[in-house]
Image (cartoon, rainbow, N blue to C red; front, side):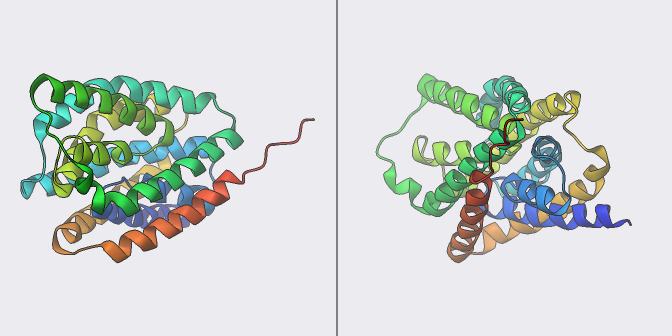
Length: 256
């Protein structure tokens, strides 16, 4: 096993554990690590991350599903709109210059950290119940934003889906995370394919990342059902905020 493959393997394990544990998708960890350790461009990090994270969705959804924590119908409804906007998000990311994409990703990381901290308290904000056609429309709208964000940022879209499912639709935390992971499969696959066609996927990194993600997601998903992770959330959030600030400080290239 060469050094690059070894690095991609441990990056996948770390990202998978994070994604399975807190339900935000491992992209918020995997992308900064790929840029810092593997020295690849931001665009290629986003495309490669999203391609690999499809396997996070598969592994995580199966693990959560075995514990009865997936709403399959809701996942499919979310995916109806997400598969279209994921392609749009991937193309939008490709159109941005490197420094702008890095700054956008930094802002997204800080937003993800805030969501991570407040997630345990989201259900307390719930005051009404949405059912029937209103629920379907709500899921379709959530899918629009989640799909675009997944395609653009190279993540699974759980940063949008999980809070929306908990706050608006009164889902339990585990079911919201499992449902989000399942939706990630078709939506992420469309976004990943678009990135692949645009040349933003480094195929040689995928074997290590995918194996690592499968192992890490299985571990993280099981830990999520066995432990309260309040301290881990705070630690992860602080690391993500610090990383996000570094990306936000990306300088604009001097005009030649």
